[in-house]
Length: 457
Image (tube, rainbow, N blue to C red; front, top):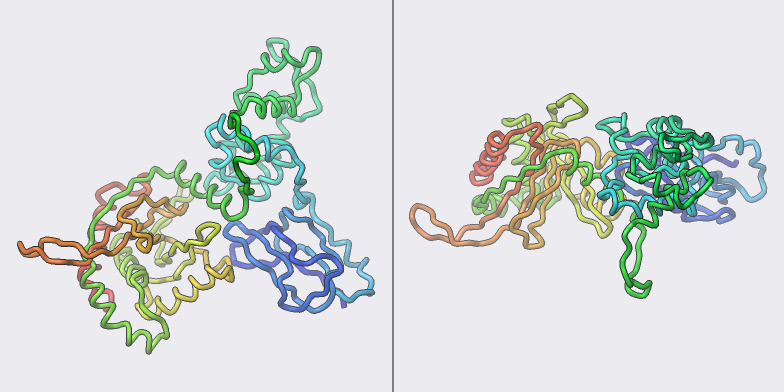
């Protein structure tokens, strides 16, 4: 019997998904559990499996469609059975496929140098971005107009912007330039001089497309560069999502970074002693990252303001210590989360974190694996890094950068000895935390790591 395949809810926070790629076409045979398509949420790109055996009878949405959860996206059935009774489940207007030939994305990219890369600094929901592109509204023109959580531009903001300037009505400004309201509004937001533009359009009113073409022509180009000199890749998917997030973080939260050197000799000795017992009891090999997760959770108990987030005008201080651990993939970075790390033993953390990281690297993670983080650790030690400036995961208050462990000569009791030393780099949101409390957090973390027996208690 033919059945509808809904847009799945792959995590408790997921509200909609963007269809990135159909793995099968209409008419293809399919087996239950076979990958049917790839979707992108606000957190990651994931594969969706077919729920039944049969034939792909109908794909209800094109690639790049933004579809709410539980809305039908495909029909699977037998070759000849009727499916007309199922085709009434059509897409809502806001979920129409984006046209690959639409000019708006090209124009938005072209104006980025002119407006200071505003496209990457404007935080939009997937549905808002689609609505803007559908209406030919540059992303830069929506800067500062978000009414969603943390100033995010949502679909209603795009609709409100467009409704204030309907494109089919001509007006005349005080200097006699005939223009449509939408063109005038976009020109004002992007700094286009309508008088100069009107000189090239004698006797005609200036429309939205005229403004966009003018901006496109005015954007700087790479002189004398030919297509043979470079290759192009689409700036989309995970890389685009990361760009949006880090831009939002840098432009929203004033970052301050403190660095401190830690003697990890005792930690290394403790780890070596308890590795066999943890492997026997929990089936996982204890790593330094596991120790750092536990140590950070312990110090957050004493410094709760570091385990917080600024959401609108509300500072939320969380009771649970949900520690995110950044994992590098070829296409970008994701942050799986160890839930309630403060209540778990080192062995339990090791047993949970290892499969979390494996799922992240293999692309088998779910949105719930990435949800709920209250503090993040990012470790570049394996690359030989001694110091760096990590970017906070919004809306969290802080992120801890971990550097390499290296044997160095240090002075202990007026004697030069070789110790295992490591730098920690703490970036924090100065709106929430001042330098002294952040320094106290880092100092206390140093004490715990240099006398690590306390994290076993």
